[in-house]
Image (cartoon, rainbow, N blue to C red; front, side, top):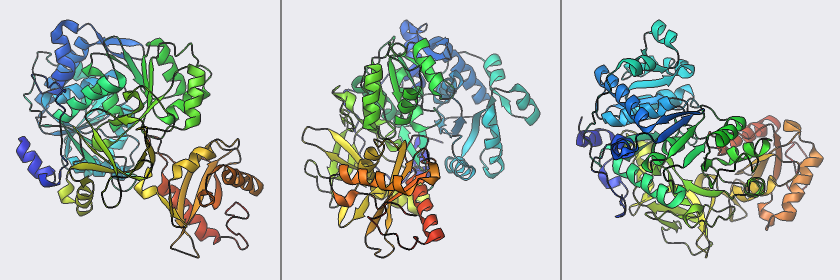
Length: 572
């Protein structure tokens, strides 16, 4: 199936697409295939012996990764995989994942990673949504794919990484056998910059996951821009972190962007503070990227010291808001700041970063990466003055195009809403201050409305976690029972008391908010003790679950008689 047929069958009408602008400075390689742009061209330039991957301390060169990708590509072609077919993988962060990705790009197949974090319903939906022909899966996740296989008519093959016995017993393809026996002669499918490289799915926190289409030209642009203006990777740099390659952030971080620069990636199959700290020291990681929760976890580990992180020259964060206390603690412990940024699955990777001008400011997501035009607009789609909250819109080399949007009425409406005058609107509420820094406030759906005022939960959460009792926090709002037109703010806090937070402690926490927030209407009406805050793999609070919890408690107790908002400081 050629590009025109793919677009006609699977993409929304072109008049609903955002305007994609490739900056003039982005150099398009002579061959558009990503396997060439990110891998082969380094080998062709005589840099085949440069280390590409450090996998638990073992080094693999660009030439070795290239050879592995060629063998897998030959095997997949012999199997029947062709250009334009969709292939999913559910793999840990290992060299095999990198080889598989470049094998698929070499063939011209469309990569559609799938996550072991997804539930059965989401996984079934995603595999059917993209119409996968093949799934490549780590043996430990095989049961997840087998559980939905019969409900995915297009899924013909499963290839297993790791367990030869399972392959023989269940009739699946063995990755290791293919890697050992297939031809390694050079070949490269001819591709066009307009061809689709990947379909990356959102986490699905507001409904079914959405498949976000990214063309080769957009991938190359993002690789170039993030390298030049954020990570500034060069040969000899080693990039490490925790993001899984089966999620969008990890796919860009470890499967694409570092390879543009000919640098090295440090991989750990699964994140733990111990594993990552060991990798940082052992592999000589120079650029560390992670979520807020990654840095929180590292700070709790005794092995995280200035000595063990001595090779680091740059630390970046994204995926979820970086708490200012974490920023300060990391700076004090390691001696280096964290440069926070903001991106989205719809945009492939980063759009803003503090690293653009190398002037980090705690709580800010920095400045637009050159090549992206970012604006803050109000409900009338007019620019907001400095300091005023509004929706962020962005235009550049990437933008929102949802796979199969024209087949799902709700998704088609979202495609229409998310494109404003050619800009992509992601549903992020932001502010831009006169100095040029951008600040994330909330997702549009998470904004709270009380006493005629609009409030973002982040400000309250950032304050709550500074209280000595509070380890984590999540804030939502719900309509007041006695006045549905107004809302009450509910703060969920994790403390050593878990679900049994004493009433006097709730009052103390609420009083703390009252003394430190700049307006009375921002003070939580209700403090709830919980054992944990549910979060996405990227670390974002699952506020829809928090709302369900609170609604359940309302139904269970009907707000115990005698409780008055603003008096007891608790809901019970």
